[in-house]
Image (cartoon, rainbow, N blue to C red; front, side, top):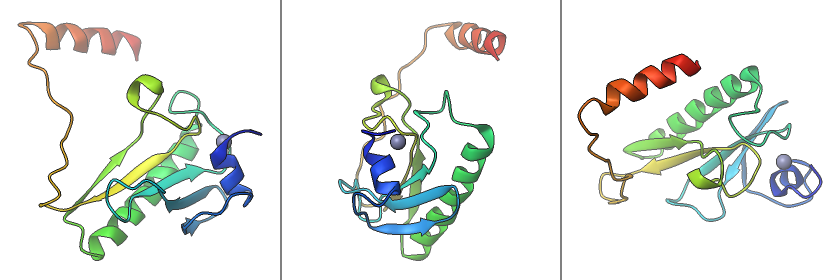
Length: 134
Ligand SMILES: [Zn+2]
């Protein structure tokens, strides 16, 4: 896509701190890291998010996210978050599919999202709805 910042990074029109590249995937450091080492894994083909990415592409991306996660652990991370934001409501800023691999330490005190207490029967009802949509 012409105006997509990640497509421009993939075409080397914009520089990045690359950590991994193969035929279908590029991984580089996020310029606004949650923690140092925060890496983005992106498909070279433009897909907007999880709704349109091809299954073989997402499978390969997760394999690379695992590889990077292991590298960050070897570097001293106590854990990693691997997240994919799909759509503006979920916090997706760049409309080109990407996986965040975020190194975590036991002392970084980053909050996880707040959980909501479901009402009686709500979990069962939602599970039924999801199952009917699969
Ligand atoms: Zn793109």
